[in-house]
Image (cartoon, rainbow, N blue to C red; front, side, top):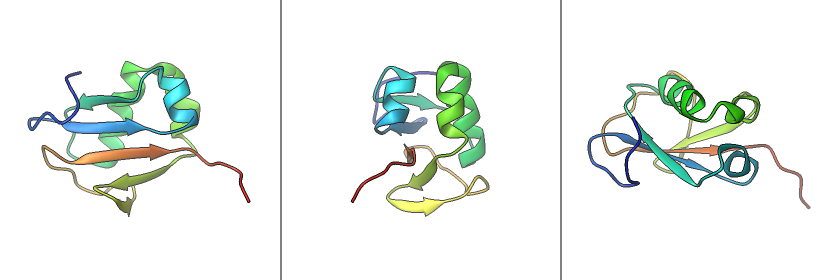
Length: 86
């Protein structure tokens, strides 16, 4: 399911840096109950995101989360790929 960001009946998935480049857009809205399900749905929509998502860090509503973390409609999942910096 894709929809507009901010939809209250799905989970907004935001892509950052290399994840945005891989997805070819800044966000999608998916239906999912967990982070793992949302990531799988995002990768199904944007297959080139797969390798980046495999090594990414996830935030749910601004807090670090793992694959088992539950999601509710209206949540925001952010996919942050690893990056170098100083």
